[in-house]
Amino acid sequence: MSGIKVGQIGLGYWGPKLLRNLVSAIGAENVVACDMNIERVGAASREYPSVGVALNVDDVFNNDEVDAVIIATPLATHTPLVRAALNAGKHVLVEKPLTSSPEEARELAALADAQRRVLMTGHTFLFSPRVEHLVTMMGDGSLGSIHYATSSRLNLGLHRTDANVIWDLASHDFSVLFHVLGEQPESIQTMARSVVLDNVPETAFMNLQFPSGTIASVSVSWRAPRKVRHLALVGQKTMAVYDDAEAEEPIKVYDRGVVVPDNASFGDNQLTYRYGDTTAPNVPTSEPLANEIAHFLACIQTGAPCRSDGQFAIQVVDALAAADESWRRGGVPVEVARPLSL
Image 1 (cartoon, one colour):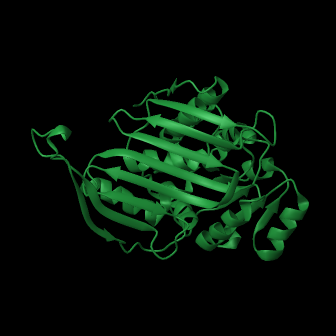
Image 2 (image 1 turned 180 degrees about the horizontal axis):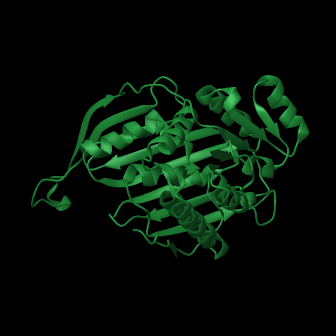
Image 3 (image 1 turned 120 degrees about the horizontal axis):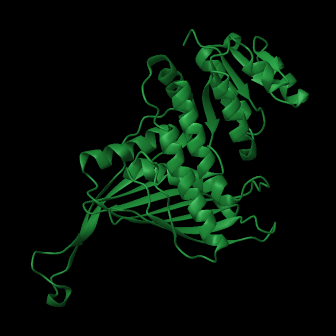
C-alpha cells in the first residue's frame, strides 16, 4: 500500500510483531521506528535497514512526512501519546485498551473527531477470521438468540505491573464478545485475587449481564497451568465453541439443545433434548495482526469507519472500568456506563 508513511512508537514485547507486519504492508522505507531504548532501535534498524529510526517521540510527531502513528507502549502512556499524536495531525492506531479511564477515552475520541483523524484501538482478535465466522453465524441466524456465553483466557504469566489481569487480558474477551453479540453489557460483577503483587489481581472471574438477556462468564488469569483461549456461545438453535489453541478445527458447531413443545411443562415429561451433528466449518487462515494493520491503513485512505473506532474503544474501557471497580468493592455488581452515542 503506497502513499502512507507511519511512525511506530514502542518496540517492546509487542512492538516487533507490529513492526514486522507494518513493514510488510507498506515497505520499510515508509516506516519510522521509535523507542527510548537505543538497543531496541538498533535491533529494528539492523533487521530493517531502510526503516527510519528515532529515540524521541517528538521527532515522529513533528515529521510532516508521517501521516499516522502506531502506539505500542505501556497503558499509562496511552492518553498523553494519543493526545499529542492527534494534535500533531496524525491518524492513530493504539494498542488495547485505549486508556485506563472512561473520561480520557471519551476525550480522545472527541479529539479525533474534531481533528478529523482516524483513532483505532488494536483489538486484534476482531480481525481474526475465526471471530468473523462467529459474527457471520450471528448475522445469518444459525445460532439463534444467545442464551449465555463463557470465555476463558488463561496462561502462566506474563505478570505486569502497569495493569492488572482485567485490563490486560479481559480487554480481548470483552472486545470479542461485544463484537460478536453486537451489544454492550449493562452490569458486571467481578471476583478477583491478588497473590504475587498486592492490589494487582492476576486472576479474575467476571459475570456480565446484557440488555438482550444474554449472560456471560469471563475468566482470566496469569496463574494457570496451561494456556487456554476458549469461547462458547450457547444459542437457541445451535451452540458454537471457538478454541483459538486448536489449529486444525478452531470452531465447532453443535446442533444440540433443549426442545420445549408449545404449552408443555417439565412436569408433563415432554421436555426433550436434541443431539444433532457436530461440524467443524472451514475457516480461512490469515494473521489477525496483519488484517488489523491493513484495516487501519484502508480506513485512512478511504474514510471508512473503523471496526474498533473510538466509540467501540469507549465501550470496552467502560466495561473494564466497571469490572475493575466491582472487585475493588468486594464483588458487588457495577453498572456499565453508556457511551453518549448509544
